[in-house]
Length: 432
Ligand code: DLL
Image (cartoon, rainbow, N blue to C red):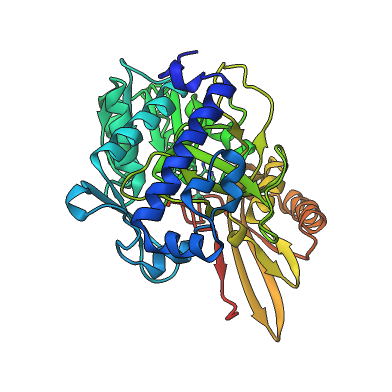
């Protein structure tokens, strides 16, 4: 298995920890000096940069939240003058203004470096034709993957998102070997390729996916439909974009680029750091960023860090698939429900497809949870009895896993919406 930068990706843990500690010290001083909101918070608890001597001192530093980006909109979070910022990206906030992020030339070099690691870890390199179907623009997906793919010497096709017919044309005519997009879009492309009997005309071998939560079952379906090896890749705009963590071909968790991003897992309620291996909220500190240094950013993403070393030889810790953000969680009749639970249940039923839509509402003060699921072609045709059987078994299983009664509707194949970018499977009509 290829490794892009063995010196750093396979650095012995003791040396890595020493490097992180040194970089953390430098970061604390840099942020204290340049960003008023860190200085105020550190002063408020009596912490000075020279108190930060090792990784154990991280817990003395303040947390950063999404709200800090809103309060300092658009560029009050930048630690250097605009003349040193060479790139801007933004993520569309769920409410109101976008989160604006900036990069110096050095930051772009770091980004290119971590994406190169991601690409090589996924099995892709010089000789591959990589079709990037993430949006190019303010979203970090398109440009983020682009620069690393070029760096490793792959041929990049910057297709951007959408226009499925054109994606398929390019894929066939240019001999695309690796696909980059959200897992939702990969699933859709897989369906279309099979429906149109194009499998013999596309030559995909690898997929580098990310940007949204997906399940192991969905990976299996995408790999089957497209005949590829697919890796999961995690990142967020506030930290750098894609490239924060990436899977190798062992496909058991995503290696965090720990020389640049320092992870912690905390209990989201108490904010207390949890021991290695436990599930909690991922908190990230950037160790080398110049334009937008971030200390202890509360990602809202729930995951755990894997203590065991990876057979691939990389020494950087792996994080497990995120179950989604803490704020994806729906509270329905007082019960906590994650859309990812629905997806795992659907995967147990061969006759149900992984396409679903959840509609939550409140009728006469009672929460309703409607779930639309596509049934497979075979059973939809005219086999009412089989459909009824599936409906009964799936309803019962959902109720036992989710702990609430689900109003299940099986719908015709290919009638629910498909997504070119990140999927939006939940509509919450309650005015809470
Ligand atoms: O989605 C960056 C990215 C682009 C990552 C392309 C990977 C590939 P944002 O738009 O700021 O940035 O959204 C970040 O998306 O906090 C997670 O909740 C979710 N997310 C991203 N990747 C994954 C993943 C990009 N592999 C937010 N699994 C994060 C689960 C993911 N959730």
